[in-house]
Length: 124
Image (cartoon, rainbow, N blue to C red; front, side, top):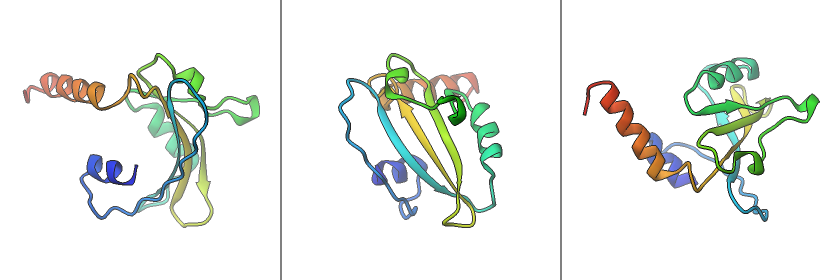
């Protein structure tokens, strides 16, 4: 996950920390993300930004027990994000839980979506 994140973002020395949890699910990957930004970003601001991102669905209502589950992501192309909260261990940090169907959302679909965007923008 560390190397893949660095490769995707084109930052070979990007500091990344990873927590991997193996649980028996048929489909989907779930990741606990810790993000540190240059400027302070509140959890509410992060929710708003992510809610407007294409292919992202924010599912973040802990009081109603609504957060991303592997089961809910199965069979869908969207990436589900929730449990968004400020990380009090660093000045500009966020924590979140991210879930996606690893059989649908991965390298092949990402390549198709990037190609579609390039065509849409007249770059390909």
